[in-house]
Length: 271
Image (cartoon, rainbow, N blue to C red; front, side, top):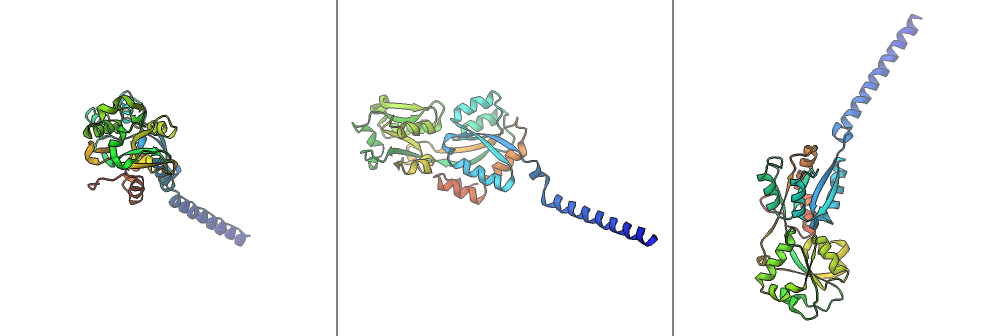
């Protein structure tokens, strides 16, 4: 009997030690961050509509955290954030908007990050007879009845389109033909649906899988319009600042920089 009790005691001790070791391994392999995955809400410019879901998928795979996007015009997002919209991050197509939020004390200090420079293109459907090699002069073609651009009142690409047309001295001749999308994605839809003959779009949309086989494009010279410097900020009212900052840092990784490049963006050298 003494031997039996001693053996049972030893066996119980071994089991307890084994369980403790197993639990320690689980704690090491399953850090708290992964167990408490978060979803952040991001207000993103419409030129990011196709590339950002790919970025988010990579981010979730590496961190277990997910991203919910709202795509739209940067100017409208500025107003929404100023009025308390519950976004964690704002990716603008114009650095001026995040700077306004910074000046108003509405961003997390030190998070302003210039993540890309956008490019403007002329875009038509494959069956169009228009010669894009003419550049913006093609807008004077008599076959053109409607020209799609984003609304310059709140869409940076719309302002760039107007600036480029004025620079090339075609704006006055074609302004009556302009139809304006609420954002650059809607502008692309106008051309894709045949409701406009040609559009001035973001390069990131023209090279996206859903559009690149349906149309052709020509770059508008960057010297024709103010640089489309795009910037992001973490919103001060966010309750998920650490995850938001993690996503912002993820944007700077080589894999994401390469992906952004594949969609026609350039990342500023200083970053």
